[in-house]
Image (cartoon, rainbow, N blue to C red; front, side):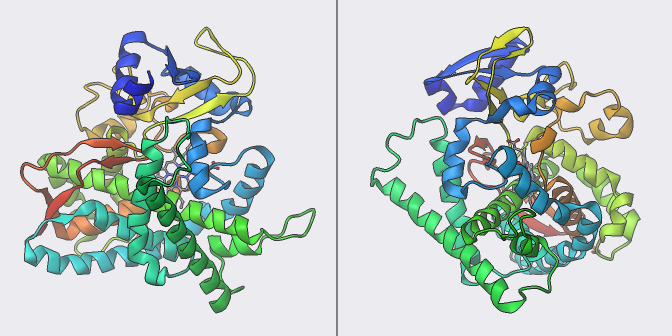
Length: 435
Ligand code: HEM
């Protein structure tokens, strides 16, 4: 299946799930694996028998760019890093960070005044990338990217595309000095320089005073050895948070604006909710509870366009999935894009319908058919952070603006490491009258 999977991974996995049901065998190049779509099997791999699985060798490419950090490491080392970072993501802590998020999006709302008056199309994907990067950098790293701010998005686009497109290859040509590989190396060097800048700025300005994620990473001593993280490990973790925190959230928002532009009724209901809940002043953390529809819109957008559209695991020992033996070394593919469209669990799966996420409608749905943030011990550490951030951003911007897709623009999901819009998302920003 290698050529087909390389060409159209989403199409191939969707077709296989529809044709073959719960377990579909794949041979992709030298690798064997099962696409699993029964929630019980997904639960076994990600949660109940998670100790029997590592992230698959397909993550090696990502490891090459990010290093061996929280997202890519395994076992005791992973657990240690997770424990160090976890306190920065407690609900209470995130509630405190929400004011930093709210301030960042107000800056964007102010800057959009000029864009709205100009009436020219703006790439909303780029706008969201800039905004979510500002949020991660300020809220978690308490830093400023200085001269690297604008170059970083381009560097990450190159890395994402390179890793995404070579995901399924064996890496035989990775070290050849081709133009593509050189571009990739230059992007990695830039990323590294940006991260070094963040760390050295922090060391220079406020080494001990802050209590954010970066200070936890910098200050934490190993209980046994008393050592702090090495500079190299610190660099890896900062890179991980910088990228994992900005890219996925910005895509979730970009797809949300696209969906709202295509569904006038949902957009109106959202606007009415915001107007009734906060009456003109910009939303804050305390307002989010009175904006349930905004959250349902985001949930539905994460269903249709999950930024982490697919991931995979490798079995350390033989296992059994759906009555089939999964031999040691084989892969299990967990593909949220497919799970989120299974007709057995989602009526009219292609339709945009935020009401699916009302309390009543979600009550009987198994947890393991909706996995935008993964599940089990390796579940996204930033999920609450991302959802609060997304709700604040949607609330603040939809309160003042409407976004319209440029007429005739083609929108197509592009499954790299993350699910990007292949041709970008040019939109016209319209100021809501009276706002
Ligand atoms: C809508 C936004 C987001 C989505 C859809 C998302 C999705 C995911 C998924 C699916 C995983 C698990 C991957 C796997 O099991 O192989 C994951 C892990 C992770 N995410 Fe997120 N994420 C989002 C936002 C964030 C944010 C805001 C941060 C940090 C600020 C973050 C940091 C991480 C980290 C560090 C991991 C690795 C956790 C571990 O293995 O212990 N993510 N994310």
